Image (cartoon, rainbow, N blue to C red; front, side):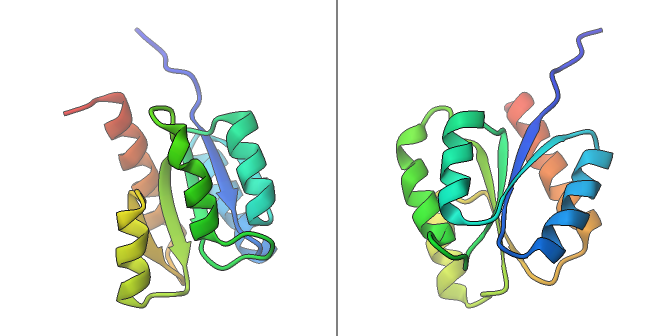
Length: 130
């Protein structure tokens, strides 16, 4: 039986009240979880820690979610999967995020269980290309 290494998730969000329950849920689902509280810290951790998936807020201090995405454009082919999680639900933000390579766009508020399912689906599809 081939046991795959634990997947690493980076949560980039400036709202500590959202990070803690999300971190707990992802760890309970078997993931290693890293956190960053602004876009600059997030970029540094993406470069240093090579997460498999990033949960990325759009509006943050010091560097927005879109600025974080721009810094990742040169990370191919080792770019992580990206789930943008935001309260900005205007269609233009969703379109821009998808154009910039976001795998999923999730509106706040969300159900943590649904977000865990999205993460599991994205990371499973990475392991088993179709």
